[in-house]
Every structure is written in structure tokens, then in C-alpha cells.
Amino acid sequence: MTLVAVFFATACQNVDYESYTDTIRVNGVDLFYAAEGAGKPVILLHGNGGSHNDLETTHRELAQAGYMVYALDSRGQGANPRLDEYHYKDMATDVYEFIKAKGLEKPAVFGFSDGGNIALQLEVMYPGTLGAIATGGANIFVEGSLIPSFAEGFLAQPTDEPLVIMMQNEPTMTVDDMRTIACPALIMSGEHDLILADHTRLIGDNIPAGEAVVIPGEDHGSYICNSPKLAPLLLDFFARIGY
Image (cartoon, rainbow, N blue to C red; front, side, top):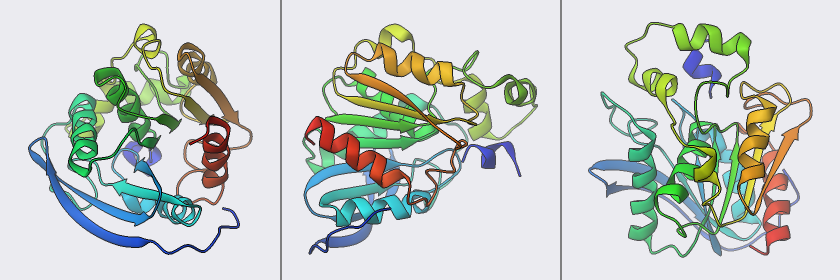
């Protein structure tokens, strides 16, 4: 398994809703996305090197629970043409422009790993855009955010893979950035995650309406990638904040 690969529910009511896939041009790139459901908007963002398919179970269950769900393939990944260089700030702008192009009003965003970094970066760059943020396995900076057994080899690994280069050097957000996020935020990681539990708490504890949760027994993606465990966590969060 490559290092990139490493980074990578419920009884639901039956409702009538739309389901389709499409490609949209935003911020100079094409983004493929799948849309399903009806109701308040929720955007799903996958992890590094993945695609919207990684969150298919959660996508379906949120749609059946009464939300309009958009699952995006991040720039240069999934069904999108590959790129030679990647930056989280570009990806945050991609999602921001997607939100504006679709006319979405303060959507909730769940991001896994890189997707969580993107969600946080978006709200830092474009304050007031999101109605809620949930993340799984996100980090806001590199040094000191990863478990030492993984960080030692990963950060020193020579590579010409653009997605790995990005992860070795970004994101570059700060605790002060987290303090500017006004919307409710659920910051999650697994007990056996690649992200340190203390880093998860650092993020959640410094977002004014944030909370940090470390999921017992789970690793970086075990409760997220096509798992029935994620949707109940998100639905409970949405219910508690009235979304």
C-alpha cells in the first residue's frame, strides 16, 4: 500500500429525490460530482488520491435522511484530469466557487483527511460561507500533527508525486485561523489515526463553536470510507446544531 493510499448506516426514510452526475468548470479546472437527494445541502470531500466513490455509503444515507448531497472529485483526482501541482488553497477556492455556482446557501461540508483540510481552509479564506463543518482525520499544519511512527518516513520520503509533495508541505493554517471559524464544527479522528489525537483536539478546541471527538477503535479511514458508521455521526451533529 502506498503512502497516498494510507491517507485515503442507519435506518433511513424513503423520500423522492433527484440523482445525477455532472462536471462543472470552476477556478480554471473541471470538477466531476455526483448529486443526490433533496433538502438542505451537504458537500462531501474525499481524501488524497481518492474520489467521491469513497463516500458513497454516507452520500446515500444522508440523501435518504433528507439532505441534498453533493460529492465532489477534488481537482486532479477521481474522474478529473490529473495535474502537475496541487495546493489546498486552490482546492478550497474550487469548492467555494462550486458553492456559488450552484447557488447553495451556507451548506454543511464533511471532509475526510485532505477533504477536511479543504473544508477548514475554505472557511478561513471565505468566512461565513459554510453553515457547518465536519472533518475526519484533518490537520491544519504538518509538523507535529502526525503520529511519529508515520511522520518519520513520510516526511523524509523522496517523491515526485504532486499529491504527496502537497501533503509533505501543506496545509499551513494556524490556531489563530481556527479561532476565526464561526460556524459549528465537528472535528473527528480515529483512536488509531495517522493524525494525533492532540492535534484533533487542538483544532476542535480552538474553533469557537467546535468540538473534538476521537472515535474509539477506529483508524484514519475505517469509520469513513464506505462505512455505515459515519452517517449516524453526521446526522447526530446536524440534529444537535439544528441543521
